[in-house]
Image 1 (cartoon, one colour):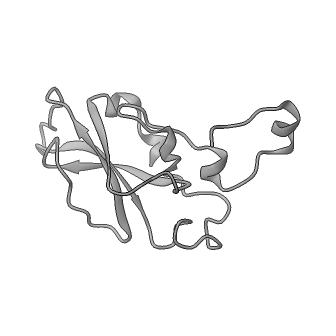
Image 2 (cartoon, rainbow, N blue to C red):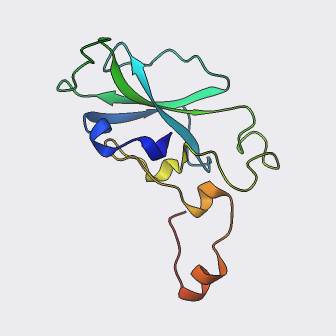
Length: 133
């Protein structure tokens, strides 16, 4: 889950590779996967589709017990908002969902009004506060 990813776990990222245009996506799911390499496209074993992944620099060290690297993978499931706009996530988003516009190497990103699928609250409107869209 994105809320469990800490910046120190992704500090060795050097780039994010997007497999499709993310400008039209309200959110992507992110997870830290154990992968055999620092670089290259990882194998994907979930329902849905992989949208992107992180590359690690040469200073990233593998796990001593498994020899694998923890890398972020970005993905969407068949019932996510991009495929079913009026479905389960018409409002709200999965716990691991993050606005792809807020992501950068070494930065875990954040949820936004857009990723949550709702308009700003009345209190935010009254105070003139807007979140990134």
